[in-house]
Image 1 (cartoon, one colour):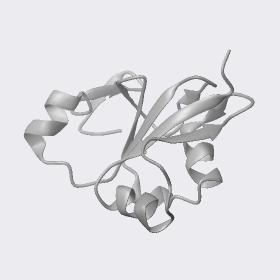
Image 2: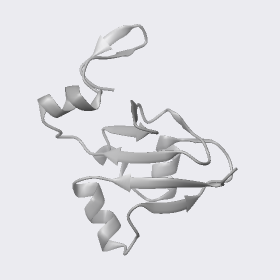
Image 3: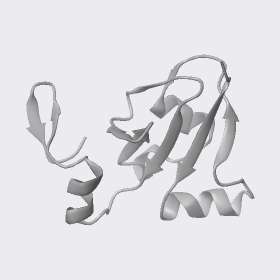
Length: 102
């Protein structure tokens, strides 16, 4: 099993990757499961600039556990409404009720 995760970022978060000279996607060593928020912190990505994370193609909250071998994408706030629905993070159920976002 691989000990790396494949990481992408979009919009302003992608600019951070570019400024740091990181590859796209970034292959990052992750020896043990961790939350997406903790992964963002390890990468020094600003949590207040992340609205949602995709893990293996599914929209997840930042508390979601990322496993070695996963594909991860960080998405900033401001994604237009129609795309929110298509990407699967509009009207997600959180704690048993619908939310407009995570």
